[in-house]
Each structure stands twice: as C-alpha cells, then as structure tokens.
Amino acid sequence: MKKGIHPEYVDTKVMCACGNTFTVKSNKAELHIETCDQCHPFYNGKKDGANASKAGRVEKFNRKYGFDKQN
Image 1 (cartoon, rainbow, N blue to C red):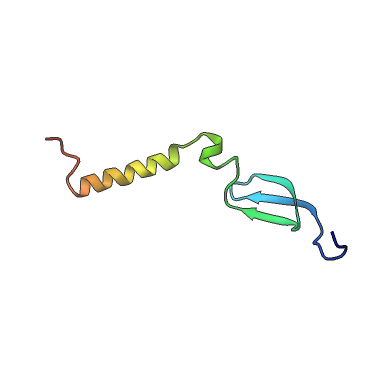
Image 2: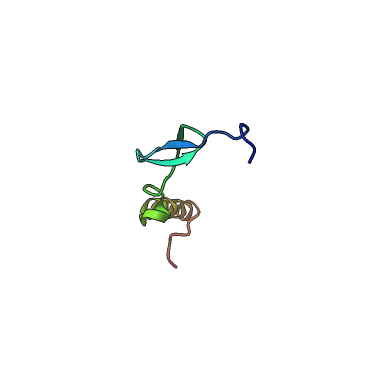
C-alpha cells in the first residue's frame, strides 16, 4: 500500500436509533444507524410487530370489500 493516501482507521462508536451502542473499526469517528442486531426482528426473534401490522391491513382490506363474511 502507498503511504499517505489512505484514510486513518479508527475505533468508531456506532449508535442505533433504539439506543444500543457498540464499537467497530472504520474511517469515521461516529456512525448513526436505524436498526441493529438488538432491535431488528430477524435477529432478536420478536416478529410480532411486523406481522401484527400486516394482519391488520389484510383485515381492513377484507372488511372494506366485504370478504370477511363467511358464506
């Protein structure tokens, strides 16, 4: 590698929107992210929020167009 042309590699403080913070290596001093392994449903196993809102939209559609009635 050529000397003097690469950015400095420093410890980076990563802050998630959920409040979780952790440290990684990067060329920036701070990073702000929206999701991390603590708040993302795939990694923490809490899929209730995403499925509940989807089910609510389907039920609303069915009520709107009359599909919720059983024949």
